[in-house]
Amino acid sequence: MANQKKLRLGILISGGGTTFLNVHERINAGTLDAEIACVISSRKKAFGLERARKLGYPDYSVNYRKLGDDQAASAAIQEILAEHRVDLVVLAGFLRVFLPGETYANRCINIHPSLIPAFCGQGFYGAKVHEAVYRRGCRVSGCTVHMVNDHYDEGPIIAQQSVALADGDDAAEIQRKVFAAECETLPRVVQWFAEGRIQVENGRVSVKQV
Picture 1 (cartoon, rainbow, N blue to C red):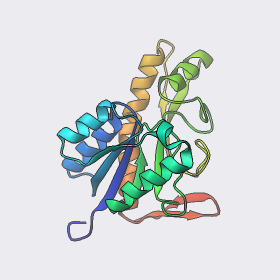
Picture 2: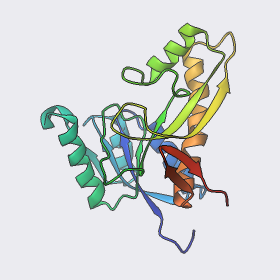
Picture 3: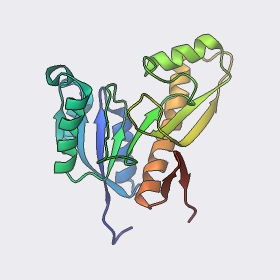
C-alpha cells in the first residue's frame, strides 16, 4: 500500500491505552498499513492520553457526564473523528457507549476479551470478564473483534481467536493469555479494513480472499 492512502484510525480508550500502544507499535514496525489520526478518551486523566500525547498524537477527552447522555457524547466524538478524517473507529478498552450512527456504520470496531456470546454485554469488561471465566472453570477463552452498533457487544462478529486454559490459570493469567491473542487479532482485522476486504451483508461479516 506504499502508493495508497493510509487507513486513518480514530482510537477510543478509557484507561492505560495498552491496546492503542499495540496498534502504534504494529504501524511503526511496518506490519499494519494504517495511521493513527487521533486518540479520544472518556476519562480526562486516562494514562493512555498521556501516552498518546508523548507519541505526538492529537488527544481529546469527552465528558459523558457533562454532556448528559450517550447520544450527545457520541455526537461530540463524531465531530472530532470527522475533523481528523477518520476512516475506521477502533474501540480499544473504551468503557462507555459509543453510537456510530450512519456516519460510521460498519466502520467502527471493538475488541472484547471473551468469545462472544459468552461473557459479554453490559457489566462484562476488563478484569470482570476474566474473573467470570475463572469462576466458571472454563477450559477455553479468547477474544472477539466485532462491529459496533447501538447495543453492547451485539454487532456482527469479524474475527475470534481462542486460547486454551490450564487448571492452574487464575484470572490474571487468563487475562495475560487473552491479551496476547488480542494483540494479534485486532491488528489483523484493521489490516483487512486497510485492504478493503471486509464485507457486511444481512448482518454477517465476510472477509474477501486475496
